Length: 184
Image (cartoon, rainbow, N blue to C red; front, top):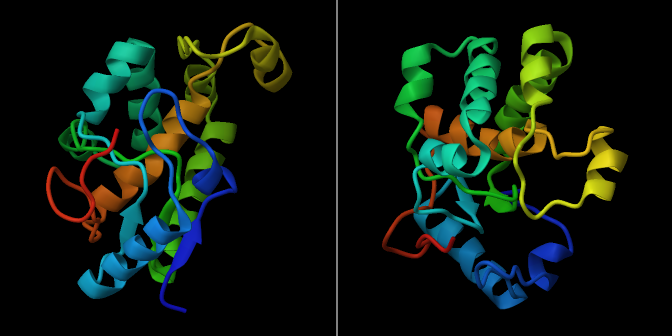
């Protein structure tokens, strides 16, 4: 097994209103060929050209940075490593083509993140803060979070794989040019 594709039916079926993102089966095959031909560890489908932390501060406010930093510090990342990664260009939705060895490492990382989020009182409290998600619906927030607002937790966890792969210096097809141009 050379690669795994993570995603849901929405990977090929959902058109997002704020960017033209959708993937046909032909496009997925093209990305698989790119992954094989260039030996990438990961080929994300939704790639941002914006700096991660400045984008998150704009949309989610200072509580995002506080929760992000607390979680990663409690996962034994140094503050200098965390800040060095603040403006990396992230990828989203956790839909990508990935090598099995990279996926296994990611699973260990995410398991550790979930453990810290559930068992560290300070981190848990910070993750429960209002994400200021403008597109959210109060009834969904009540059902999922038991609050009138969307909490930071999913927005932070969506960005953790990108942080991890960049911090681990894995080969990512992602940039302003080439076969995996920014598309968000």
